[in-house]
Image 1 (cartoon, rainbow, N blue to C red):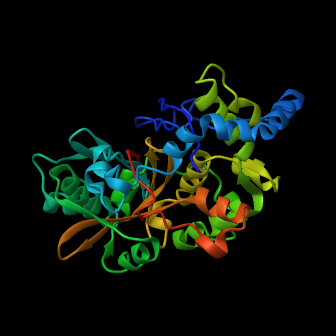
Image 2: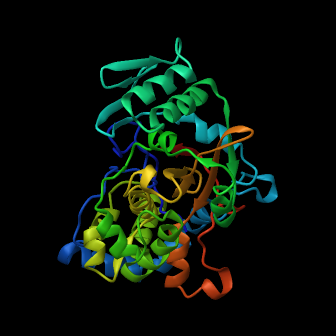
Image 3: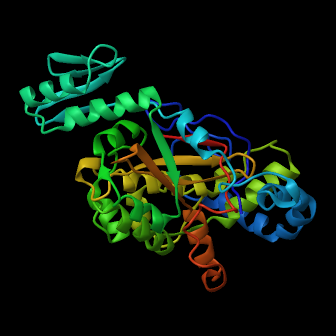
Length: 360
């Protein structure tokens, strides 16, 4: 099931191009009370008219939701795509941190550390190591310089795995938290780690546990918003965008609001936002496995899901292992009691997902 709508840019962070939402409207989470008296009436009307939606818009809905993953030679999927090119397209390191009391930031072709600076054009690893030692930064400046220089030169490689293999792979090299910090921008350390721990039952410094804990948290406090989906089907397939019907079904979906509710309706991009916030709740150097999460959009199917990236150094150089997870599927499968047939639904690195764009 997809969430419908045409793509339109949406504000998602201060420093990068915003990720569009599949329903084609504003980007940041908007609070709502589910529509009030008028919204409830519309909700009942739409639920009652489900058969008409299926009849009138069924062919287009089938096209949007089911086809296009490579069946009959049409479309593609994550297992077939050139994911490295998509992942690299918007990967532009940015960095501004306090490292042991010294402000360190990326500024064009330089790294500025306190009153000193390193140039990627004129300086090398030895220069970075000397400045790191002089400023007593514990190797973090040297690591940042080496890895950002590699990214700028294209001397790195992506690797793609299912979630278990991803976390196993992260044990196969030297973790590089500074470049992970540089890859994060949107939704980085924007929520209280305590909220994440309450929601997931997991320590925010343990990304593998957070990934799993989000499954239970979303199942306990949310459900896939079928009434809003039906409203979108009417809007997109019947009245062809003549009115915004989804607005009547929106709820507050911030972590605080979700923790106060056991039945909030939620959509795919809202699940992506919350998952990224949770995985970014603490800085990469504090994480057992340094993680940068990303927003992956499938424009063809009007769907969004979450990507995870780590960074390691091996004998082959800088490597960026990646995986993909889908909390829409984990939530829906539980809602409709399908986990016994379809499994948990978390793994999105398969032939039933595709990517149009990746937003860091």
